[in-house]
Each structure stands twice: as structure tokens, then as C-alpha cells.
Image (tube, rainbow, N blue to C red; front, side, top):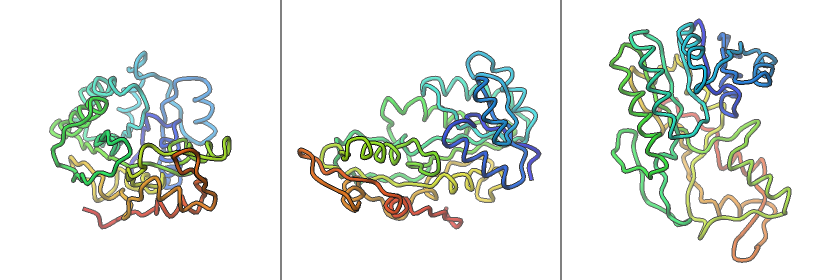
Length: 270
């Protein structure tokens, strides 16, 4: 068991799920707090708050990182800032023997299809040309992976669409839209396919003690659900669906979320 895990982004949707998982497993968990409100929320959840800021008080962040065995980066900042922040973290913690986990996402493979289906598929180490919006994230991934040669363990995890308690992502957006307007719509033909993962499954894979994570690794295949339903399939399977203009709209129920997301955790993944 690690002596401590520092979550950068512990107050976010994913960060909260990670904190719950590690606390339940008996770990000491530290979380970055940029405000009094965040400090209070972390304390109430049993997380030791660390006052600091990635832009204005990086020294406090580095001090907390040096005090633990593992650091998980789950912060939501402007994507163009990520390479610089990650570079500072990796440089100051070189030769520390710690584990650094960077939560990226399969969004690095984004394609502008206008809602059309794409046959493209990528393995972890496949080369690809990212969209300009994803270029800084891919650069940050490269910095993290290269850090393994500096005497510590660096891991990149690319989850697909994440859902779970406190969800504020696409699944929750659909639910809110239906609650407010009675309908929700898709883009173009609605044939873009999305894989999903439950936040608890992501937390298990993100464990610094995961035997599947090596000195330097990148992982996204084990987090993908076996089926990748299109957006229209998800909507048409809902109990309440109706056409609005040229788009099909509906309600994403809990049962549909479960079927779409599958909550599968492939412990025998590649």
C-alpha cells in the first residue's frame, strides 16, 4: 500500500471518484484545493486538502507531490497549459521513484465527421495526427511517458466518455436537456460512436498498485466497452423518444446508461 496519493483535480467529477476509491481502499489521500470552498469540501470527504494553485502557487503543489508515493493528475485546466504544467512536475520529481499517472482521454483521437460514422481505430502506440485542439494534450502525454527515463514510473490513461455519481459530462447533459425541454438532439446523422466507462472502473485502473501498469505505459483499450453504440442508438433505445424537427430526441435513463456504458473492467486487458 502506498503511504499517500496526491490527486491534482480532486474536487472534479473524476477526482472525487478517485478519492472515494482510494479512501475506501485505506490509502491516505491528499487533494489540491484552490479555494476555501474546495478546502472545506475535501475535508468533509476525508481528503487532506493541500492549498495551492497550478498557476500561482506551484511550489505548494510540488511540496505535496514530494510527500507521497503517487501523484494522479486529473485537473481540468486550459489544454494549452498542460504541457508546461506537466513539464514542471516531471522535472522537479525526477529520480524520486514515485508513480505519476496522467489522466488523458480518447478525445485525443477526435475526428470532425459531422456526426458520420468513422471506421478509424487506434491501439495505444499507434501514430496519429491529432486535431489542433488535441495537440497540447498529446504533447503532455509525451512528456509524461518520457519521464520514465528520469527514475520514476509514469503512466498515461486515456478513458473514453466517463459516467457515474455526480456525472457532469455528456450523459448528464442529455438528462438535463430532456428534463428541461423534453427532448435532446444529435449532430448530423448521429452515427458517431462512443465508448463509455464508469468512474469506479476508471478508479480501479488508476490505482498506482495496478499490476498491469509498467514503468512507462499508456492505456485506453481496457477501458473501452465491448460495444460502441452510436448516439442515435442510445437515444432510440430510451423509453421516451420523439422526433423534433429533423433530429431524434429522447431521455437517457439510468437503465440505458448502464447498458451503453457496461461498466466493464477488463482485468485481462492488453
